[in-house]
Each structure stands twice: as structure tokens, then as C-alpha cells.
Image 1 (cartoon, rainbow, N blue to C red):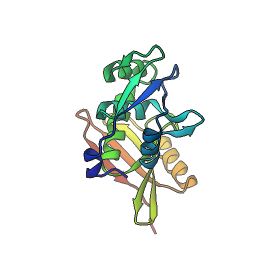
Image 2 (image 1 turned 90 degrees about the vertical axis):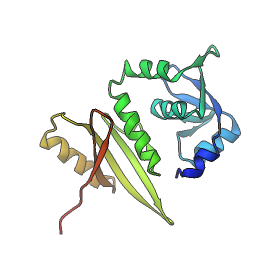
Image 3 (image 1 turned 120 degrees about the horizontal axis):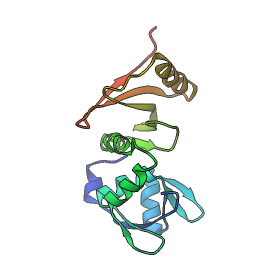
Image 4 (image 1 turned 30 degrees about the vertical axis):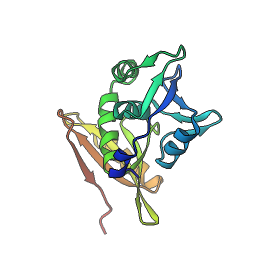
Length: 179
């Protein structure tokens, strides 16, 4: 879980951008840090960061990203490249950033759309959420909400609806079963 001490213990590490926009971090100290903070997935080469995680860490100044030729990849450059395939990347980044700032562990790459698996450590236990992001003004049908709730129930997670407005302000709605 991130805390105010994260800002004090700022660690900077290097990663390599892959053709699929994922990033590999191999430095043992960085791998330990990322693993402790629950970023990425362990691979045979180190930690594999999803494009959204790489963007977040690049924007925070933790990640120095290099391409296959060894040239530095800047935040804006990576954002533009990812946006070609994922037009919702900015909204996803804003939601991801907000969840991380609130102390949640966030898993990406789970599903199409703006969907995250989110855990919050409460003492020895974890509170588990399935967060669905919707942009303000977008029409959402009943079937989409039904899918949100069905998937949350099937995965044993509490559904959270995040509405992101045009100024990137985020409002969360918790949904629970009436008894």
C-alpha cells in the first residue's frame, strides 16, 4: 500500500519498453520495490509492467524508460503511442492514479474497458473491489450495469462504480445487496 512515506523513499529505476508496450524491469532492488508495492507481474526476466503501470511510474518520476535501441522514452511519447491502440488511456491513467493515491493496490489488464481489480489492506485482511470506470455523459445501458454486478459477484469482489468527469474529478459509488 502506498503512503506518504513513498514520496520520501522515492526510488528511480530503469525499464525496457517492449514491442507490445509492456515494460520489463530487471534491477533486483527495483524488482523488490515493485513486488512489495504490488506493481506488475513476475516474469523470467524480472517484473513485467503493463503499459498503464509504466505510464504511472514514468509520470511519477520512478521509471526511466528505454526503448530497444537504448533511447529514452518520455511520458508524452509513450502516452501518444498507447493512445493509438487505447483511446481511453488518459481516463484509465487518471483513475489508476487516484486509486493508488488512496492507498489501493490496483491490477490492470483484467478486461476490456475501464476495469480494475483493486485490493485495500485493512490490518491483516484485504478488502476486494472490482472498479468499473465510466466517463461522465456516456450513456450506459442496464445490461452494462448488470454485467458489472455479475462479474463482481462471480469474482467475490464488491463492485465500485467510478464516474470520471471532464476535469478528471472522480466520484465513486458503492453498490451492495439489500437485505
